[in-house]
Image (cartoon, rainbow, N blue to C red; front, side, top):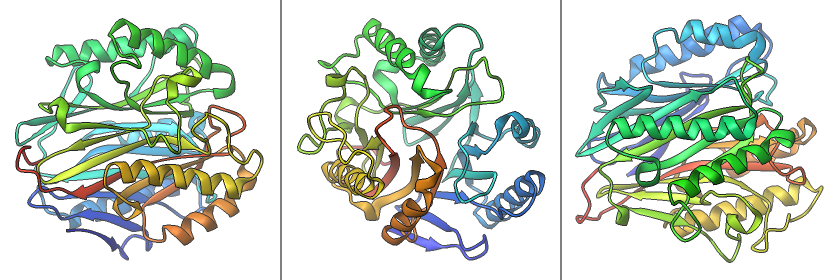
Amino acid sequence: MTQFIAEKKINSHFLYKDEINSNDEYQIIFHTDKNISFENQINDINEQYRVYQQSLPSSVKPVIKRYFLSDASNQEHMVNQLESDPECAVSIIQQPPLDGSKVALWVWFQSDVNLKKKSGLWSYAHNGYTHIWTANKKVTSGDSYQQCNELFSIYDASLKENGISVEKNCIRTWLYVQNVDVNYKGVVEGRKDFFNDINLTNKTHYIASTGIEGRVADHRSLMIFDAYAIEGVYSNQIQYLYAPENLNPTYEYGVTFERGTAVHYGDRSHVFISGTASINNKGEIVAPGDIKRQIKRTLENVDALLNEAECSFDNISSMFVYLRDVADYDVARKMFDNKFPNTPKVIVLAPVCRPGWLIEMECIAIRKNDNPSFRQY
């Protein structure tokens, strides 16, 4: 059974704990006091993380961490020092937490994990599946088109060293774009051309993704790349989510990603909802300039995608909310706290790829499954 547990030991923030069979999963977002220096905030986050990790069974390990920073130029080096000997994939992105703090941290823990690192990829195996994470990949030369195309090509080459590929095995990508209003078009075209080269088209499939404002300390890196892939999963275990009554196919307005992807195992399903905004099934922005109505429509769209995977909001294990305008934070925080009081979430400043969208959100959901035709997770 899946349940939410309030973890009072860590500043009353909330933990998602999945208790399906023997492979437990935990997702948590650590927050900190905004009224102290960054050094004290990052130390506090690290102490919360250390105390919480020590409370877990010894078989439980982190598989991905993502730091959200307010000012990468002045903060990234301290996080790199903290993660000088990382135990899992680590992503470090400038997307300021809008609660006024300088740092937040998302972590996904899983039990029975033996992480290995090869060719820049972190992998671990369960029941015949190998789960592969890559994080914080970047290059420093070329425009956004060239950087995007190169990063996908490097990632594909790394996967092929492990006997797999982007087109068959990649489930989810995150594309963080410096100055998204200027550079996103190049990212879109770079990804599209790479996908065409490997026969990912609107006749085959794309990959669930978020493309959003985000940066690192090095201004030359116009795009930062995170991704997740699985070896050993069959095509009939992967479900692409469309919700056509709510949303149009992405290729209709020139982008190439799936609205969401569900991966079905014998005992559970993992559902990855891409960055989703206030849009209708004609590709039009719903409620331009109105943050409350855009939040409402965004949630309706996410709900429709989740329902297609036989999930609901109750199955969400973590959510990430992106705002274009800091002035909308109080409204957004109140609406999300009222609707999702116990769900691990972070609200950050990160302009969406289309200026008329005031908000975008993504989430991960996990639900219990009972399908003996698939191997357990």
